[in-house]
Length: 144
Ligand SMILES: [Zn+2]
Image (cartoon, rainbow, N blue to C red; front, side, top):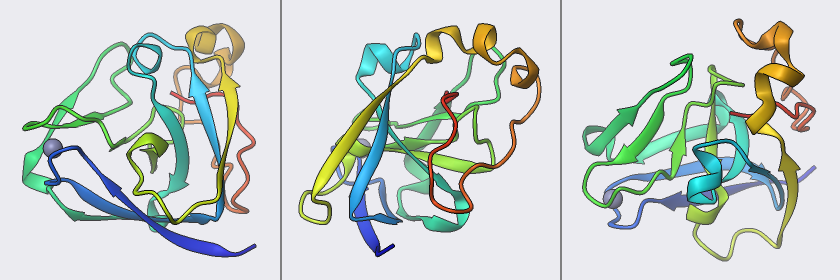
């Protein structure tokens, strides 16, 4: 698989990052209470494939429910361009809508039923789920 460095960030440009991922991106469209409201498209990556280039001091966080996820917003423009997801607290979810155009060919969008996360995945609701992403595949339906 060919790995590409994609760049992106928030609206005002303070928060900038780069992420190593395939050229054709598989992203998840989650229907949970927070993702559904913002139209967030998840590109889940292990921490080693994500680098924050700027904006550390401009990030503010929002937490709710289990408080595992850390929803990170730019305090100036309000855009959540990436965050630490509940399903992968050792990694990052990058918002594919916040990637700069040009580095990827296509987005393959798959639905994710984050709204019923506990019901579908009771065994992982209270604990960190296993790491699924060593081979770059998205094998988990449980996102947020
Ligand atoms: Zn901003």
